[in-house]
Image 1 (tube, rainbow, N blue to C red):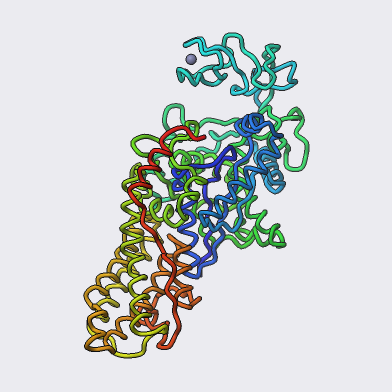
Image 2: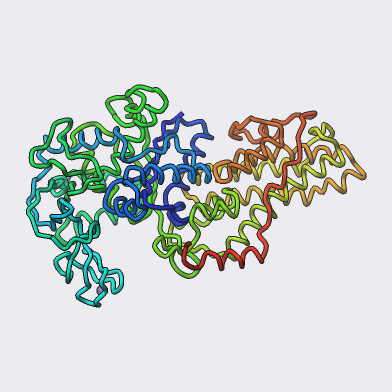
Length: 572
Ligand SMILES: [Zn+2]
């Protein structure tokens, strides 16, 4: 048994995520976690909401709520949606937790001790009436380029021109509208990433099993142009983790918080500590996943994320870990994804274009989405969601192949042979051939799942469903029952056992349908079919089964057209 630590990139708190976000990190991470558990490994699967920073403050202000209250509510919304999609996190934490406060302050303190923090003075806009510094996004004014009167201090959304707050005509505070602004000096902390460049490069060079895409992105950031840059880790904001050096105050940094990019990945560790707290366990329980001096040396750590997050997880977060000089676990394997596009364009959160997690669950069960998203995961290139493809995939793969097999076997068995696994007949060369084919395919499936080849694993699973259908079609128990009932009984006995094996194999992809299949087979034995012939005898003659309720329904053309229309425009 291996010990497997899995983290999914943590979703930002402001709003509900779309299906492109889901398939880029949380969903494939869940697939892998479920598979590794099914194989008997000890798994720790952590995700959380990323709660700090300006966008959260602005979203809370827009909702007319204190930011703490807004984040608590949105965390609950995201946690419920994660449950709805059956994401099997061991813990879904919050980057605003006290655990993350203490760990982030701890890391900053260690980095300072090791000479890796620089204090830098900068000029920033201060709002006298609001009594605070304003980040670029908090300053509104007229765009010098197009005349838009509500351009933001970092960018004009009308003409997309990148701006500095000082470019704006008639600048004002986005909080109060006050124009009583001035430029003041403020001090910030920088992580001296350049001083860690050699260490980072040596570490990345040691990762010979990483995909070229991952290492090339990291190398580009390390070496292109002026190379890896030092990076600010503090902000003049209210909402965040107060800047401290470990548990000590940091002179000159009063009233400042850590920059969200610095504290967010530390939440992977803090989330595991939150898991221990939630389960009444002590520090040793989570440290054995993260500290190589406290039991984590046999842990293999996998991260899942979209490609835009790769530089950050190969450089900035490792810089924090390596710079601490402490024996924290570094990532062993990083699985990254390209983008999922939506019906001829892009998913857009700001325009509400595409299907969002809450909308998806309101029209169809989680398994339908899980299957389509995972079987079309954007691994080697971007992929595209279209309603035609979604309809075809659900109707063919789930309804016609898997659902049809289960339905035909159980209905035929019950109507002709009774409500228990029939006893008659022996396996013939047809069954021997099926078992051999199945065995080879299951070994392929295992290997693809272990390598996180998500699309290929889905294709192999589908092929495993297909061979059951083909066997049933050619063995034709509905013909055999008329002339040789014992032969029909042998076919049905094997087929009922196959339903149970399908439940086990399919569970990482479609957990609800898998549970329904297992329940219909009157079993709770999820033992992985390492020994395929034995697995196909697990349900003995006389064992009771039932016909599952319609496992999958088909999507009609009318529904498809209706949804295509409904999700094309602005989210209301
Ligand atoms: Zn403009």
